[in-house]
Length: 274
Image 1 (cartoon, one colour):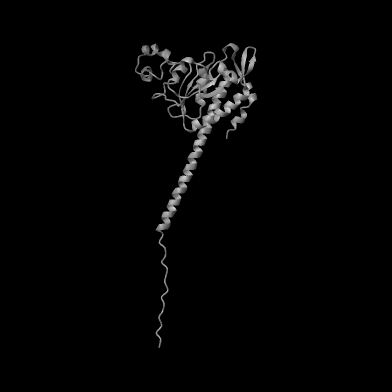
Image 2 (cartoon, one colour):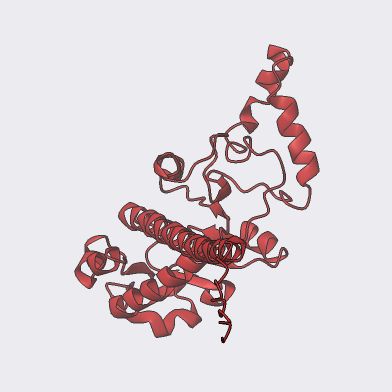
């Protein structure tokens, strides 16, 4: 178990450019303790602290996936092909249901955050059912065709996505301010220009690097596999304990039902004295 932790060493983090931050002017005050220094007006994150935070977060995610907690992905970055990255990872995700939705993923947003998504979910759900219905005329469907890319991560849902925690792949203030009202824990890839106090679970690193984002997706899948493995191990452990208890009860019942042979008492012969 946890073999992947040893593959994520300090040299690997520098290779995927996880230590590179934003410009010096945009550094958040609360991120100073996680910075190694500044070079060419670019903030450089401390790789030793990065690795320690990854190790701590990995074991927390194992416990969360063991309890079958779900998450909602928010990755909106115009500078990166987030749609391709997220769809590629979701298709490879090992835990999937029959409804073509992943086991732990309750939904995702990859292009634009729709304001009031969770507070006005009934309206959005009825709208999704309306535009995806086959009986609509082609003219009306063409009219609402521009909304399809924004609602792609929610169209397969049959009810309101109530995740146990949200994952922010980059900084998005509109989504962050709205999700905070739901009072659910937040996990974020925190760069040098972000405030770490907004997030309960912290994954420090460069959120503008494709290699680092792929590393984070692999990080999640490994934690989900370990959490599912722990769940299976505990299930089989309690199953064996119950089988043993049931066998003991059956043995006791069978021992009571067995007819014990009666002990033959020897009759004393009383001889007649002449």
